[in-house]
Length: 332
Image (tube, helix red, strand yellow):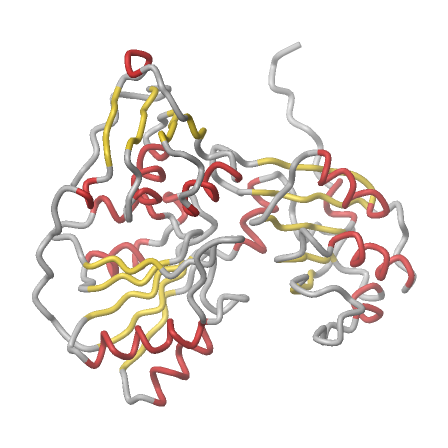
């Protein structure tokens, strides 16, 4: 079902959210709509969308206040499965979330798919453009909500491909940059399933750029390093050499590090990085809810908390954060 958006700024109410609520919301946002969802606050996908400031949850809306009121079409009719066209898996990186940053090759792969296995951070609005519509399988990991183990995701990809279907694994960013694409590739190869990859625009580069932060800048920074902040520096599961990171004299990009940012900053300072080093955290890069918090390394975790920086977010540490001169917007 294609959604017709009345125009930028239109107020839209989504009632009875169902399996396609994330796709519907992203399609509406792509069209410039302001989206409310009527829901009691128990739907995990809606809670996630609201926490990211993409929608507002309302319990008893005034229907006359909206330009459009709709419900999840998946609750009304199930579309018939598409005929099988082959047995293969394509790993598609969807970029940071803005549909305009999905590659042409990625979009073409989606158009040819029989099945799309997708994450919550992919640009889900583009799925509304697929005609005929493939089967959509959501496997995103929602904080404090639904969680599909990676092992099960691997099984789904293999099972669908072995059934003779053209499968697209659709996720945010790039599949091979902290996207577990390597695990999915190996699972396919081990099962004898044909697998290819279409690179995506990784958030490690896109999020800083969308916030006006270059990762390199001549005469300032000559390189950058991307690290996972999923576990704290003192966690035995961490394999990052934080001393080496602190001594690189390069821009440091931290993914998945919102909860551990304070301890990461402490570790970098303890290993010699200047506590006044410029830093910035960028949340929901490329989406209407994008937020940026800036400050010195020693305070960036607190500043981020005050600015309500939540996952998904990217933190950039280094002198390139302050390398660009602000634009004159012409306003006083």
